[in-house]
Amino acid sequence: MVFFGLLGSMMLWELLAPRRQVPPRRAQRWLSHLGVQLVNAAVLRLLFPGAAVGVALWLDQRQIGLMPLLNWPGPVELLLGLLLLDLAIYAQHVAVHHVPLLWRLHRMHHSDTVFDTTTALRFHPLEILLSMLWKCAVLALLGPPVLAVLLFELLLNGTALFNHANIRVPGDRYLRWLVVTPDMHRVHHSALARETNSNFGFNLPWWDRLFGTYRAQPAAGHDGLQIGLDQFRAPAEGRLDRLLLQPFR
Image 1: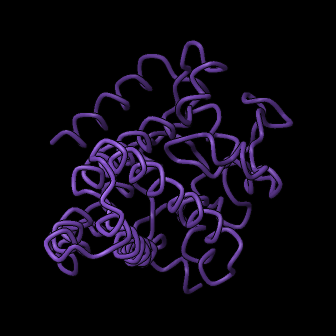
Image 2 (image 1 turned 30 degrees about the vertical axis):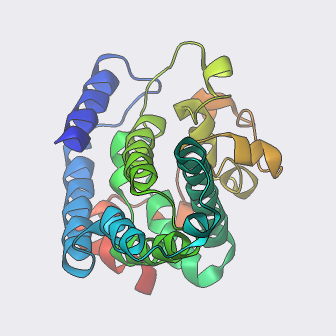
């Protein structure tokens, strides 16, 4: 309920004060993206009933991972767990852009020619499944506190909806030192490859600056920025069936 409440709030903000002009027939895109979200939720519920938090609970009961061995103070483990999980998602995001087979799955997210909060729902079910397997491997290696995994999942889902939103955020130049903002992440959805391969962070913005993948602004400016991939601009490409079959075409 929290997720859909935040989604609805972001959509309302976009309707009242959009950052960029929006095309007509938004309802068609929204329905397709909600359809993708429902498929993804069903796949995860079927294969990982407890999701990441359930895996973390199972590992915690068996004291599996590096953190149980180190036995550091709780607050230290909580903070370290949040940081390392975010770093793992950053590394995964870089990988899906540079490994061709993974890009065939991830490009469904980038083929959206409009950038709004529902774009955060547009991930192929196979990518969602591989992402969960990667997350499980990281959890088994680290063994972070269950609370860290719960907070991270809440933050990741919330910030994804926020940083994909078609909104103007006051104080963006300062806020982006603390969290990935919509203007920062919009660059990542550019049609230009050099801009697409930048700003990989979803939650924390520090990894992009640390590893040299940060780009402050798009070359054409945000009003002139072209979103999406050229080979998927036909309106029919936004249909749910076309999205789900896209990696195999």
